[in-house]
Image: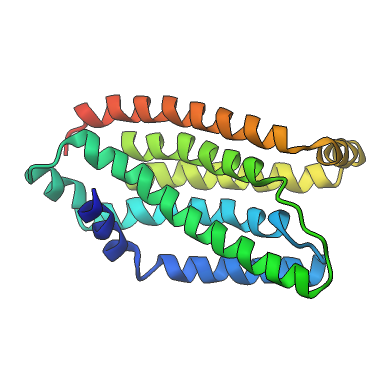
Length: 212
């Protein structure tokens, strides 16, 4: 498994840091322009970085025919699949941890009191993204899967844009945020892990019969 993770690092080390830096700059802009610190600042860009982790992983893997070469070696298909999920999770976790550390230091420097509430919500969003996107990339070739991912991203941005312009939606979000507690973080994490488990089972069934 370590060798497989190293393989992904070598394939993505040229492009993924650029996306990571872009997301990090956006996080800094959120802090400066919106005066937002803590989980909200780092979590907003973490979801986008998770998206880039998935797309870059499958793009570079497809261009280099990494799956074909790995399956020609004594690697089981299930292990190759699990490694894809683990690789995305590790990359996202490293970015999220770095972002939290930066925003905490910036918040303390600005005299803000920061809370850890919201970690579960960010984890849930990232796990949902993985749970829906990875099976699509497993089932279809990169071009079709990427088109579907772009359509999904565009629809998400449009819904978010129109949503924040609605006073009712904004009021509802404020109520949810004000009532959010650490218990909800735990519920989000449990729900995310459950959905991810279903996604892994679905992807495993497709990957076992996939022809290369």
